[in-house]
Amino acid sequence: MALPITICDYVVVTGKTTNTDHAMTLAINEIPAKDYRWQSYSLPSNFIDDEQPASQLADRIITLLNTLWPSIEHRIADNEVYLLLPEFSGVDNPELQQLLQAIMRQFPALLRNQHCKVFPFGRASALMAFAAARARLTSQNSSKVWLVAVDSLAVISRLQAWLARQYFQPEAVASEAAIALCLTAANTGLINSLHAADANVAAVGANANSAQQDAALAHLFLHVAKSMKQQLAYIMLPDTGEPQLTSFWSEQYQQLHGVVNKQTQFEFPGYFTGELGAAGGLYRLLHMYLGFEQQRLTAPLLHCEIAERSYRAVSVFNYQSVVQ
Image (cartoon, rainbow, N blue to C red):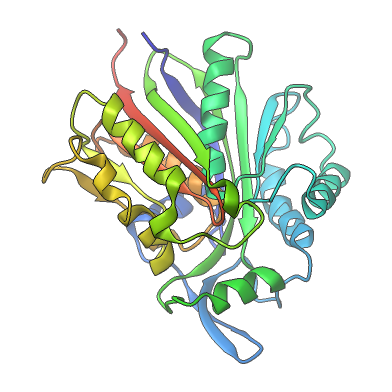
């Protein structure tokens, strides 16, 4: 039987909400959004400050990590860390390399452990990193693994892309976050009964492909339907109010035929948190864990993450609340 994985520690910064407990209530409460004025635009946002957007992604990532670092520096010392970042076209992408160099200069202790890994897959990073961490922990190769995610829309090129999207809706809140959580094997916690990830190869390095042609997500949903032996109680998705993101999964929803019914419920934390990018996937993973712990959510739960361009990931979770 699979060994449960528990979240034994976590720190969350979401925009102006720098208190972890308050940040986690955003998933069930209103976002502290305000109008962000930039050039001729005014858009709802929840950034950590009211400064003009950064010209370089690396600058904003460092700013966010600076807000998180004092709380985690001593906790993660010499531990295995998996760093979750925005989606890039490949590991040799120059912007990714520039970002990693900036992070290592500013925070040399963050990736000191030889087993540290980087997951530059956007929203899909969280489920991919969790699966990798689970493998390490259940094989007893490591006692703890920290997942650290950071992402922001407060960057000129990213804000331009956000505003230029054909289906941009004013209720979709632009935001940013830095999140760290610690995983360990335990007697109670998350049981990850299924995990799979895929990518739309033609879309790597390009704009997001059309929802109708999202072969990767169609394949993953079909894999879930064929593998499950019981109905899904919940499906958690990355929607934030941006119609294109919703269309990616809704166009492929029929592939889940046989494992969903009228009792299956949907969970959309992103409507409350705003768009957190790569950090959003980790936020939703933590939100799910706390929901199970507090008996607000029931299993089995399908967690689906959709990166902006290409990567998609799905995981089915159960929760073991008593020692077996």
